[in-house]
Length: 415
Image (cartoon, rainbow, N blue to C red; front, top):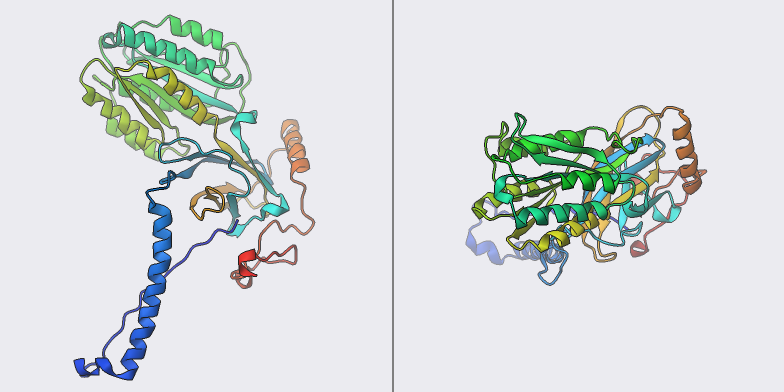
């Protein structure tokens, strides 16, 4: 995979002062005109190719891309990049691999043929996924909407993997405006019993306070719940809201939440299941939160049967994240180094998206568990003797101050 960019310059012709319009037919002017015309046509053709790839209405991949959630270098020299892929409907892309996910570290491109990085779906890995369910328990939800909410929340819990954790927050009429029904918990039975205790009896809907607390909870470290004691590493944390979007008397505003979402170092997507028996204009509040947080908005309205299908879709999104694991060869100096992931999807299509992150080169503590994890990764990504995992681009080879003699390869297109 070869990732590239292109810059074009605009050329502007000038007519010497005093020559007048009669000189437009001079040989020198005609030569210049032909030259600029050729440049213009080439630039237009290149622009048209790129514009077609990005705006072709026949493509169902318009707006697709990737979002890096975090870069973890706690096992350096082994680094892990956690990312989410999506199409124009925020649905995950499938079958991403080393051939359509390119890796650039400190400006240099990794060569997939040297097997110094690999791409895996989070679905088959051990890291846990954390989710926080926020349930509107106001009296306006009483009846069929609330029953459908509890059933859908139970389905969401039953669809998670064994190591994944779920917390439950319910809107309440206390001074905080919410109640932590369950902290992060793995056991579906425990979570199900706490769901069953909820009732739609609230007099006010302090929705924004509840979502604000969920964001605060997401920023903490999972304690493993009451029936499990492991505090394992969380790959991602998301918020799932069941509500009509109406807020009454919260201490924080929607704008406050928008600012918090924008400033979060690690994204926490908000998935909103928006249903109502009252004014549908309130649903826009949920739509705004979901869009700003890189989540997804589900317009349920009064079609309550959509809830179960929607939570299954959310679980599929959460479990379709990818992890890029690579062996780094940068010196340990505690510095931040820029890394970039480039995705071409479908492979060979020329449709490329980029996302940038940073890694810190540090020596992790020699704890037994850390050393064991490093040893396993060392077997999967053995060090190259020449310490050169990079691909050589013939157009930048002369500019590369670190270019070594190890395994140069010329792209086929340049041969």
